Image: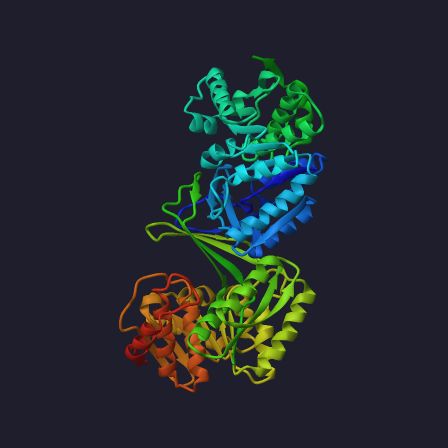
Length: 308
Length: 308
C-alpha cells in the first residue's frame, strides 16, 4: 500500500458560469464538488490506475464529513483524523472561455493534541505502507518541522518517503533526510537560490538539496521536462508531445506515477517515464486527481530519457 | 407561533477578498457560513426580536445538515423535511470597496412524494401557528400552484397568511385568496402591468392584486416607502431617515415586522411602522436575517404614516 498524506485537504467546488462579472449576480450552470488537496489527488490517481493506496489527514466539521463521503463514493481508501476546526473549501469559477478564478479559504488550525493524534495514526499506517508520499501545504497550528517529523517516523519502520513541499517545511524536513524530494523548478530556485534558466541551473539546485539532506532529488520543469539527481546517476526526461490543458494536479499525478513505479520495482529511467506520462495524462482532465489512461500508456512508451 | 416557510433554503457563504480579479487565484481573508433563504431570514429576524417563530422547508445532503446545525446554533426553531437532493449553496464575494459578486447554485428538485410529505408537515404546523409567512422562490419539481396549495391548507385551520413571491407562483396563489400579499413595486409592476413611477401607479397595482384575490396588499418601494391597500383603508408609510447599506434581507425583515405586529394585535398604521422600521434596521447589517435593534426601535417611533 502507498500511504498518501494530505495535511491540508479541501472540498474543491467548481462552478461553471457564462462570464464572471465583478459586482454582478450569477446563475451557476454546473456545480461539481469533490475531495481535493494534493495528497488526496495523489491517492485518487493511484486508485484510478489500480494501485493500492490509502490517504490520511485531518478533517473537521460538516465539510470534512462531506469530503470523507466523497472519498467513499470515489472508492479511495482513507483513514482520517477528526479535528475540531472546519475543513476548508475552495471555489473555482470557470467561465465560458475556460478561464478559472480561484477562491481559497484559509485552512483550519490543528491543536497540539490533534497533531499528536495524527502522528500516532501516521506511525501506525507508515508501518504497514511500502512507501509514503508527503504533499502540499500544511495547516496552521502544527510545528514548522512537521514534515520532518513524519519523515523520521516513516524511517523508524523503514518506509521510504517522497516529499513534495516547499518553504520552511522543506528546509526543516531536509534534516530528516527524505528519500526523494520532488519539487518544481520554482520551488527549487526559491529554496536554493539557483536560477531556472537552464538544466545545469536545475541540477545545481538538485545537488544543493542533496547536500542539505535529500537522498535523491526530482525537479519538474513543466513543459521543459524533468531533471533527476538519483543514486543511479543524473537523468533528464522529456515528453514526446506537450499537451495543453489544465496543469492543476499534474504535479500530484507525477508523484503518484513515481510512487507507483518505485513500488513496482522499476529502475530510475522507467520511474521517470511513468511519472512524466501520468503528469502529461492529467493535463487534459478538467479537475485534479484524474488522468486519461490512454494518454498515460502512450506517453509512458514515448517519453525520452537521457543520462547526464 | 409564527410559521415561516422556506421552500428554497440555501447555505449562504460570504467571502471577503481585497479585490476580485477574474482569472486570478485569491486568498480569502474572512469566511462566513450561515443558513439563508428568505423564509429563514424571516424566522431569524423574528427570533432575534424575541418573537416565537418556527421555520419549515425541505433540506438535503450534507449542506442541508449544516444548514440545520446553523439554525440550532442561532437558536432558530425549525422542523425541516429531508429530501434526497442536495440543498444549494450561494457564494458572495465582497471586495475591499464593499462590492458584492454573487454566485447562486441551482436549487435541488423535489420529488412528488417529498412535496406531499412537506405539505403534511406544513398542515400540522399551520394548525398550531397564529400566522404563516410564505417567502421566496420555489425549488424545481413542485406544482406551479404550490404556494396556492399552502394558502388553502393554512385557511383550513383558520390561519392567516402573508405571501411574498412573484411570477407564476403569485398569480396561481391569488386564486387561493391569501390574506396579505407583500411584494416590492417591481414585482407588482411585472404581475399587473402598472408602472412604478408614482404612488398612484403602485396603488393601481395593489387594487388589481386585490381584484385578483389578495385580501390586503402591501407594496414596498425601497427608499420610496410603502403603499398598503388594507381593509381599514389605504396608507403610505415613509421612513424618517433613509439609511445606506446592504438591502439584501430588508424585505424579509419587513415581512417579519409585519407578522410580529399582526400577532401582537396592532392596527394597520402600527403594523406598517414596525415593518418599515425593521426593514430599515436590516440595511446596516452585513448579512440578511439580522437587524440593528436600536435602529428598529428609533425608526418605529418616527416612521410617518399617511392615509390616502
